[in-house]
Amino acid sequence: MFRQIGVIPDHQNYQRIVWREHPSAPLKPYQLGTVTYGTACAPYLAVRVLEQRAYDHKEQYPTASKILLEDFYVDDLLTGSNNENELIAIRKELLELMSHAKMYNSLSEFDELVHRASSWQRLVHTVGYVLRFIQRLKEPRKRVESTILSFEEIKAAQIVCLRNAHACFGDDRRLIQKDQPLRNRSQLFKLTPCIGQDGLLRVGGRLRPSQLPEEVKHPILLPKAPHITKLILEHEHWVNLHPGTSALFVIVRQRYWIIGARNLIRKVTHNCIRCFRQRHHTTHQLMSDLPSIRITQSLPFVNSGCDYAGPITLKDRKGRNAKKSKGCICLFVCLVTSALHLELVTDLSTETFLAALRRFMSLKCNNSWHLHSIRIESRRHWQMKALNGSSFHRKHLTGEETQISAVVNSRPLYYTPDTDVTYLSPAHLLIGRSFTTIPEGDMSHIQENRLDYWQEVQALYQGFWKRWHQEYLTTLQHRPKWGTPQPNVELGSVVLIKDSNTPPAAWPLARVMSTHTGTDGRVRAVKLKTASGEATRAITKIAVLPNSETMFQGGPGC
Image 1 (cartoon, helix red, strand yellow):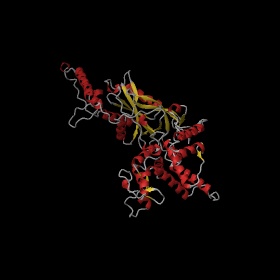
Image 2 (cartoon, rainbow, N blue to C red):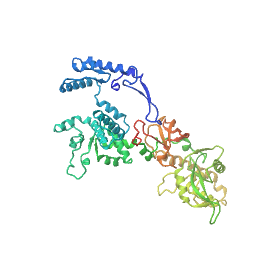
Image 3 (tube, one colour):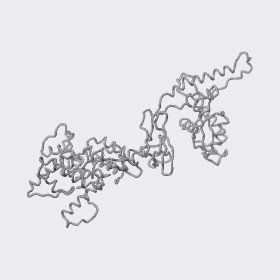
């Protein structure tokens, strides 16, 4: 009863609580808008509201008002009458008076039970035990052989729950009982509904002469709004091993005809955490602008990126029975020219990487140099394809690396027509020509006054950079993916951390502690709190779980 009495907004601030659906969900503050059970003033407020309703409607409902003032004890009514007709009239008058006060009838308590139930199975069992208790009050001498509900008791509890869901079909049900046609605007008009032997509204339809089971020919009608419909869909989704939207639609249609079923089913499957894990869709954001170090002319390898490719198989010597070990290729890529340099490493230790880094710097870099950790998918894939899973002696692999670098660095920086033979490659910005072209012959026998060689080389080199500005940079304008802005990842969000070495169902949970935004204010990296510590990940490596208020864990007792 207390939950049916509203509290004015100014006083709701004194009824603040925090709540979360499960231990890993964030705490959320709430204001209670109704009288709270357990507070000292709750009984007084409940009785005082009833008295005020009686005074306000005394002239319109004299009998009901008198009963409210004299025969109520908090929320219990103790009254009677000399005959049945008079008692029915009293009940009707009380219900009308209370409806004017916007207080619910006895169905409100059942509705509250439905909304508190976390699953269809739990709701049915709760109602089943309530019905058993009522039956024992009527027949106290009847013994109950088992504490477990029987099939008949569960069936009766399901019917009670489904009848409650049919409350919104009240007008249609009354017309059917009077054998009158439904209104044209009724959402059941095209389904020719009927009332089954169990008292439930069912589809009449056109399949009566078919050989289908009666339950399939005349499925139970369900509206889309009540919470019971959602519980039933979640239950069917779980017992049928998490089917997709179309499969679950067909399964549910065998027993229930739900108004607007497909949208509801799509929402249920979307909010199922187990299904969410299997979809393993990670988060993304509008692709950011390119950093200035990638679009500003500079010497090759001044700004470089680093990544690994592999593993590859190494042999310690030639011939048969050679001892084999695993190694990797360390890739260094110039962020401006996209030129590639490869170094062989025998393991992923810090010492081995630093040795490869020193070799790279001694060959390619000047004193002003910056290294960035990046993912070089296309070049890494191209190199592994070239190696083709073969085993190499370390000396021979060094030659392979040189050839692969030469070929990759000689590929065009951007798309060129089939007829264009003067393409621009990273090699042109490194040495002035493609690595795969044959060098020109010796021109030392030509007189010096006939060839200003240095000026010619410088003009050629500057021409390559001019083409880099005019032809290559403009190809970087478009965003090849992530073209739509997305809502930023929020603090406190529960996420899954993507791990390529484990299946999606085993991805660890984490909570967002802080966010890192770009110059455009969009979050593209987050700091996470995990069970084992803290970690920082790009948002493309996490999957944000659905809102904790709507998530469906996918189990019977949730």
